[in-house]
Image 1 (spheres, rainbow, N blue to C red):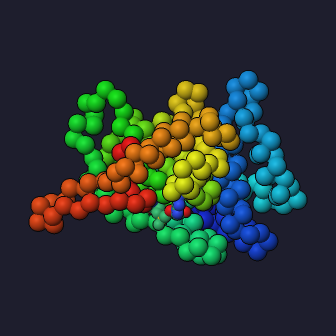
Image 2: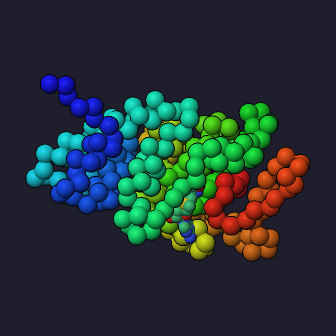
Image 3: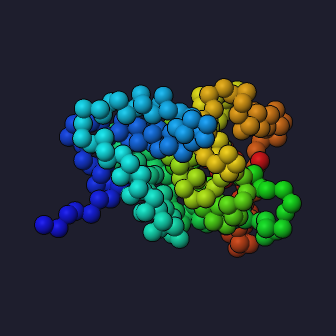
Length: 260
Ligand SMILES: C[S@@+](CC[C@H](N)C(=O)[O-])C[C@H]1O[C@@H](n2cnc3c(N)ncnc32)[C@H](O)[C@@H]1O
């Protein structure tokens, strides 16, 4: 008998009769992040305790073996779509989970992300001495940042903020699996100075994604916070140059890809 092809979605679907899929999805993200946080001294994860606490919810279920398969399937599916938008996590979340959470979240369609990123692209990007710092302060699953990386390269620094922890985890994983190893994704209310829940630093050396629980240790928290007084004097403006027949538009507010 031909065995069924296991995809990220089909492996998630296996949980649907006995588990809350939002919880399963969030647990998958948590455990994947733990797996990307290696501690060479112990040979385990820096977040081994969090991993054990999370997998314990499934200890009586055979479905616990789905989690590593889901990570494998995710990587393969992302690889297969790397040229035309590979936000598999964001798509799954939008279609299957966000409405159940009662929030009805929708992310920006990939072609629009590409268009916006192309507006921000700097033709001298690749000759700069310093990397560009690119932020989406309401990053969702991080696809706007992924589009930014397509135009500006993975050597720049990419930052995301979102109020929703599940979104923050999706962005950290999406960036990392797309080869972005310089940046940080913070869970906070981007409209509130000082706010901070938790943050994930993407790093090349040491290699991995590292969770930060104290705001003072978060480079993004310091940098974003220090931009608040400036914003009060002069509201943030992301001037996006459109072709002349469309005129110039100025945009402000949180949901933008910005340089900062
Ligand atoms: C429409 S989605 C856009 C996501 C992403 N920028 C994109 O283009 O796909 C809006 C996101 O903003 C987040 N959000 C809403 N209010 C926020 C706030 N005050 N601070 C940070 N994030 C916020 C939501 O959780 C959601 O993920």
